[in-house]
Image 1 (cartoon, helix red, strand yellow):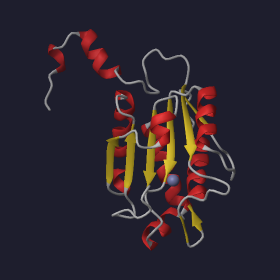
Image 2 (cartoon, helix red, strand yellow; image 1 turned 90 degrees about the vertical axis):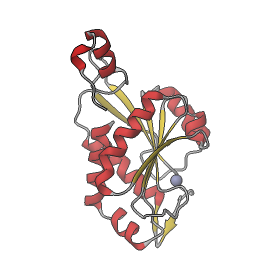
Image 3 (tube, protein in one colour; image 1 turned 60 degrees about the vertical axis):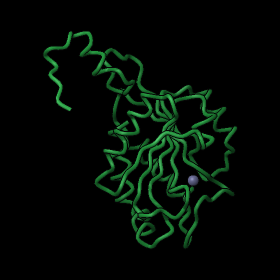
Length: 200
Ligand SMILES: [Zn+2]
């Protein structure tokens, strides 16, 4: 799309540029609060193949994202910080307490058997325009690591019941050796953590 900004009134231009709530919003005093919801934990391993469990991969990624965040305009809060079980209702209640600007619910591929082991999915809530835009930004930030897709759905608890703008993030699969090798590499996880952080 080719758009000539010069013919637009300044007010409309500002609206176009700042329509979505993001950490760089003009005039924001308070930091953008990102709640990271690492899926599974404790007795709930998630997908588990050859001793590599979804709950651990996801928690490590979430901890890295918090540790690597140096932005003053972004505050990262984790729903679970260790290998503990946390029910979905409990997560929703915790989110209500935190009142974040956005939730990233981290998982591996929900089918456990992605068409491509390095496939990424970003699923936002229906009628959440800012969330859908964030999903597109996040997808673009990891495109160099594998195929990406975005969609909206309310078929997941996080997208239906979490009391905040939530995005379900699927970061590949452990069902094939290629995916396992990649996800068990700390250097890869760090690259992924940085890419996601930059796109929040
Ligand atoms: Zn999961």
